[in-house]
Image 1 (cartoon, helix red, strand yellow):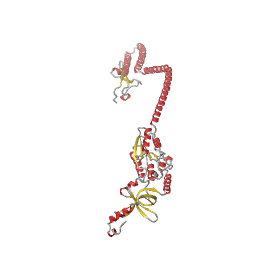
Image 2 (cartoon, rainbow, N blue to C red; image 1 turned 90 degrees about the vertical axis):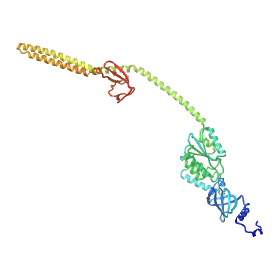
Image 3 (tube, rainbow, N blue to C red; image 1 turned 180 degrees about the vertical axis):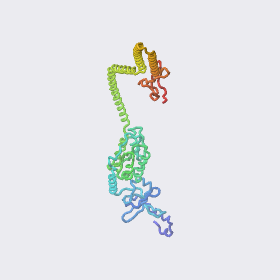
Image 4 (cartoon, rainbow, N blue to C red; image 1 turned 45 degrees about the vertical axis):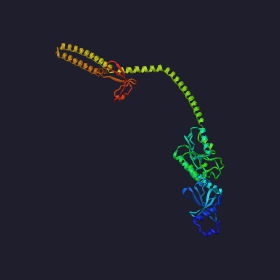
Length: 449
């Protein structure tokens, strides 16, 4: 208390401010109930707002360190119970309520807001099963969005590595409770998608009350899960209330252990399955080889039966082709022409001799001049020379005559087709070369079109 004798000396403003602060010091650990108004975030992450009722107003501040610990950040129009102390700031001349804890006063209002959010999301189809994405069968890595301390992250890692010892795990540490938790979780989900180090995300915490889990009932977290390109699994602990995060997630697990079991299979089971499939594949392969071998034996037996008939048929065709070839051979044609010419010459000589005899007899009887006989002999000589000239031309056109001048006939060894130009054959093809005397076997080493 200010003593009368001291009141005679004027206080400085700072002295009075300090005196007021000393007098207010007993007002600590107070509980104040009121409606929030004018909530604003200032420099350094602290919040300034007003607590009011129907008559009075009280300035309040929530410092950044305390804001990270509270269950949820107050919003304008909401009624809360605030714990804190009264302090006077001499620099600003303001009396403020320094808040260090915030508790819901009207959970019913909060639940009503939550139901309104659920209705909007349901209209958008956010809860539809058709929207849910399938988890990858075997991810290369799993992203864990959770608190970096506590039993939850330990249970998740232990479960995942017990099932799949070399599974990759990427931890994105977040706040899972308090005013900053919604933004912390939503930023971590965006990072998971941007970095793409994992193929599935697990969002987890160790359960809690409705107020403690409220961060996972916020729209910002729900939108982050809906906007994720990677499938999301929630594991928010034992609770009777499903959070909005559970409802929009692709898979909902009741515990972190269950979540770990859902995202990765057992490696031992996969190895056993692969071995069983390998054995089944070996059995099926061996059975198929046996069936094919049996088919091959049947075909071999049939081939042995029909081979002689095939050989005879091919031999008959070959003999027929050889006869046709011999009939069409230029040498044979020349020989036939020679025989025909000789026959014609013989007939001509015979006819000429008979005609000459008749002419001689007639001339002898009529005493014709000798010039007729000379004319007939000259005509016969001309015919004989023409026949010899034609024979020489035919022989000159014969393949044997062409070959004798240094040419050759090249045929494909397999098909027998005559190779007329370079493009009729290819490298490594076998050839048969016919010469004037004998034949050669050759292989193509180079083709120059």
